[in-house]
Length: 94
Image (cartoon, rainbow, N blue to C red; front, side):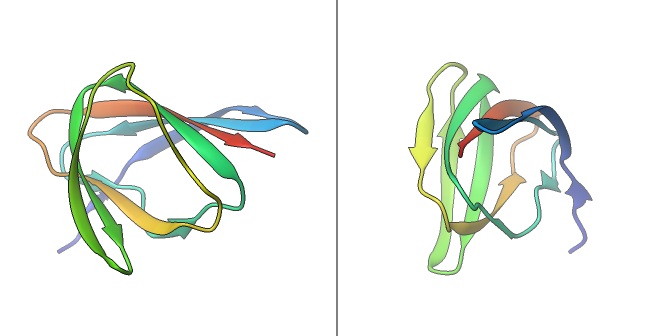
């Protein structure tokens, strides 16, 4: 199944952080990727996502304003499996 690409916009990229806004229309994905830094996700619109990882898939509901963090090196793909668009800001800490 071919999925559309989620839309990313880098807002800050300096010596301390990389801040990227991600917008996910229904059915879109980030594509498989790995982070080189620890990071924090700040949801700005509720959403229903599928987190695909090498160790298995997990459905996750994100809620605007409820942040979470992950460590560097995590390989994954984020997919919008809901009927509505959602968005989050990703803050990678160098």
